[in-house]
Picture 1: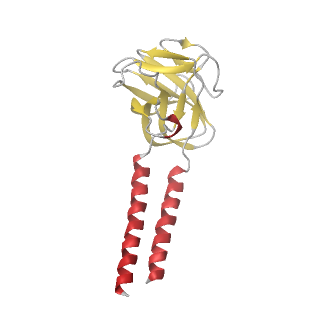
Picture 2 (picture 1 turned 30 degrees about the horizontal axis):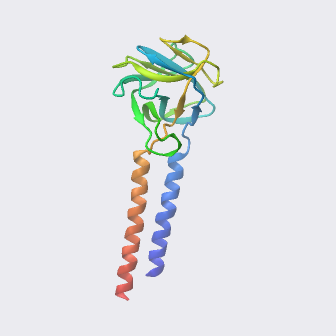
Picture 3 (picture 1 turned 180 degrees about the vertical axis):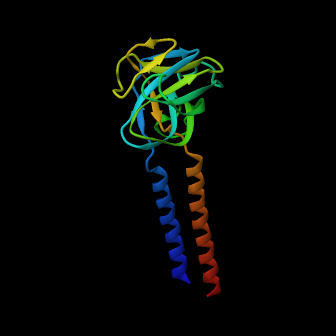
Length: 201
């Protein structure tokens, strides 16, 4: 009986690690951290990116400019093929301001769009923000800090720079929190079962 308890606990731990690994596989991870100015976005802006190999886009976040702008603002964020607005629409989501709750980005906020797990092939894409409910306040650089694309907006035009962006946005994923919770429940059940077995002996 004790061996069954050990095997159950081991299986729960291995299952948790395996599931976490599967969840993390194939996630598109890109970032451009340089910045030198905050810009208002009244109508539209876009950033092109290069996907080096097939991967899933989960969340894409443009850094929010401190306390500027309307923190309740929302806008549509489209994923288009190619660079610029002439490509094919791949997906669309509603972007909103998301504060980072932990880790090295604690205290930062991103204007974030959640695409679930959108499969993208290798190639160039454009993240297009449009129709905001209120003026957005983003951060960008006026130098080509990210070689895989560029940032263009209704405020700055094509200044030859890039937005400050990150994907995925560094906040705990609800599904990962649920997965961790499931593993914790499994280990708790294993411990309680072991206790029952000891009393039975």
